[in-house]
Image 1 (cartoon, helix red, strand yellow):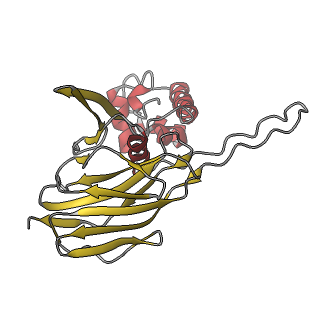
Image 2 (cartoon, one colour):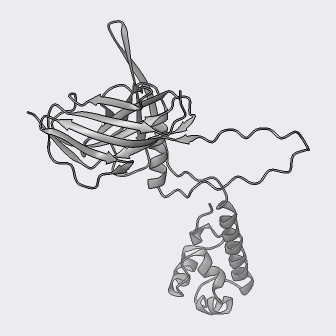
Image 3 (spheres, one colour):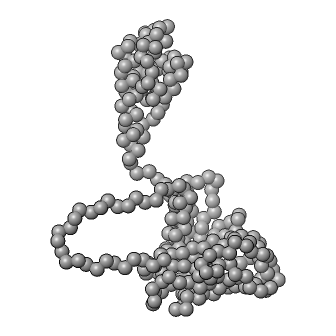
Length: 280
């Protein structure tokens, strides 16, 4: 986009800019709206003194630059940018893989998010959530296509099902606490949890036979997010279980994420209230 600095106008020198500033003309729009006769009188002490024709050319140049700025507003603009790193390491005969994602244009710098495995569905779900935080407007509906040539009607593709967490509970050394009931997050803050801790959830919404996977994602307030374990395959019952024994003691935030690897169902992510885990 063209600069809104008056120095971008050909022929405007520092001595002219000082006079314009005394007339409260400090940007392109102000120059366009100014009375040229007032500017001409204000520059009476300058040598050589700008003519009315020269002042008019300055105003014309400023008007053109403002019009160019409006046209440039239709160009593509970045909403958010990310660095995505796929990495792997070998331990014996087994390869361990992970994905690291870091948003690049925010201050202060944030810790990268880490997912174990190379499944991109939860990674894309997290990045899409970052776009909402950046204030991106919802994607506009695509323009209506031109009427096609007459043809036999084809069956409409099935709409993607929406996954849902019907219920979720956390079990620790002291007992069980429901965190999701009937698809609704329980508003009561979680009490302190005593290790060992396990999480149980039940999913619905997918068509029969749809393969599903799920993870529990942990984030500490002062550190990066990470998956407690590799994604688990959800059986036909829709019930999955997660062992949080690998989560260190301290304060954590946890999200329950589930998706269909074949993309036939929309993923679901439920962020639970902040919790504290202490050793038994």
